[in-house]
Image (tube, rainbow, N blue to C red; front, side, top):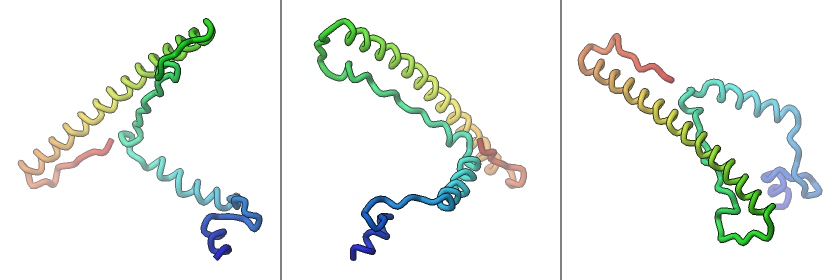
Length: 123
């Protein structure tokens, strides 16, 4: 029972985590890298919402001017990150609109012709 558990969770004899050898790492890379390369550009557009500064999430009573200034700096950085996030979302929205238009053109082509000259290009 203990042996099975150790094998299942990748534990060494002393209960520590087993280390992945170079061969295992190469196998992961061999599978993972082609997946990243083969992924369409539209699917790679990931927008990460920035984290709100901790100092703004609760009522703060700053003990000194340094803490307040740090909060101001963190908030300025947050505003910059929000602007970049908004830009990313706008880009993603534009890409989605273009994909929708291409799909509508493809559907129209299929409905209006025999379909032999119709195609839907990927991103």
